[in-house]
Length: 399
Image (tube, rainbow, N blue to C red; front, side, top):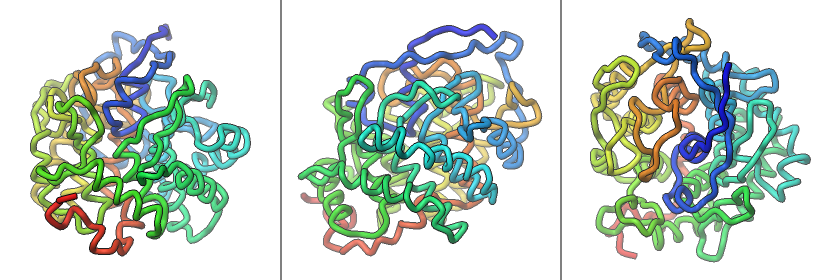
């Protein structure tokens, strides 16, 4: 199959994580990623009936002999975030062997990669595990979530050392203001503090102590819109202060977070014609420009609706997701969800990667499985017994 070298802004900076603050997206150099051209005869995958069984089979198909799952078909691209999601999905489904292959891969690289980097696994690499680059805090927090759920499911401590190393490193990133450093770019520059990654780490690190207390103080002082009463990004562009996943993850992570935030998320709601089969799909965009239906984020909304016992909204959201399913072009008996229903921009004004709307992706497909299996990845540490005086989201919101 013919290949081409292409600078993939969207692939490297959007596929790898469900969301990043716009400061991260706009200010960092772009890595070069090798991507395969999809043959013309395979360019329009068929619509297919939604089936969790088909999705599980497709995710199994995407796992290589080294344990890593490719983020999307025809990319030669592996994301730490997507592998954490896959490990969570495998664990929830009882496919412990699939989860262990992923976790073993990273556990076996504690010395050669994690410690060699002075903490943190690479955010992305190719399917062989080579060409690793960029160390992003948020995706490492997701890996810790996956380890925590595996231990809970198996009642074992198989990856205790991996969990301890990840937690110790996450704690080391906390600065005086309570925020967590985002990590290190490929060129050695620092990644700014990112709200989404910080609240993920808040959940992934077990218990409640000064680490968690200081995160809450940081969020209240620097990432809380006192008028809208929602978590926000850190950007100089007010058009991108609000991000869908800060609404969904905020609600699912922070105990007693007002359910009203799910109604406020309607600001991201839009309808688009599916690229692959021209059905009208309704769902949620990354941000306020509402130019795409982001299927991963839409699945996160379905999960949040489930958590809020909003059954009607959850079912309507799931039905739209299931209209967006496409058959795999590499294994016709399997299926998954593309990253977006149509082509457009990511969080911010930059274009998504070339195949975002025509190939199944791990992130959207995994979140769909979470919803269908009633598996909330944040549930283990949702109840942290946060002191009432620190729940700034339940009072007037005045700093």
